[in-house]
Image 1 (tube, rainbow, N blue to C red):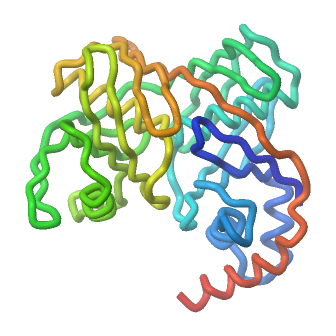
Image 2: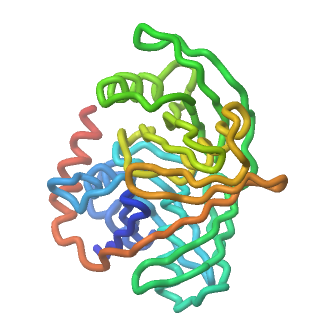
Length: 284
């Protein structure tokens, strides 16, 4: 099975074309996208990734479906979107100034290719307008957390304030991500406004856990910090894996950052591993 792997600030994804995925699904009765995602994202037995993106290339664009490392579906990933745009640009020989359109479960997103350095591609992506922005208090893990919740194509929960230490992050992240307030779960960011134009974040990704970066999480953190934390509407968002630029304009949010293609090859043992995960899925 042909696989491509790319990352944006360490937030990594494996890409399988829909035709190849379809052959995988029919190779073993009972297999499904969830099993394939968990098999391929396994960091010890598979290729290893935060998510699997099934895609279909189009002229200067693509369509995508995102599955998290645990096999659950997600509407959108800003970093995965940028990585897929890099694959489009690489495959079709696009040059800076070109636009790439990607159809996602959160609508069509347009990205402008700003620069290319070898296998690294910089894009400015139009992420759409944030929705349903509000502040809430959440009783969780024997404390009360004040958070900004919103949709950035997917559900987001942003806790503004000093960043938690490792223990508090590990304690609060998973329980916020699965809190009953969020029926389909939520991505969680802890965000500290260090300056009007700079925010530092930690991310607990729905269906993944801690991640080094998040595109939609960076957008949500910037919006929350501007709405409720005194930040400007154009900021650098610093995550453990790197920095992205977020602009919140009247027409929507724009995300600028790099993506890098790191692997293009054949996944040789997918049949045996898919068998294992498909059986686990049936028995779960």
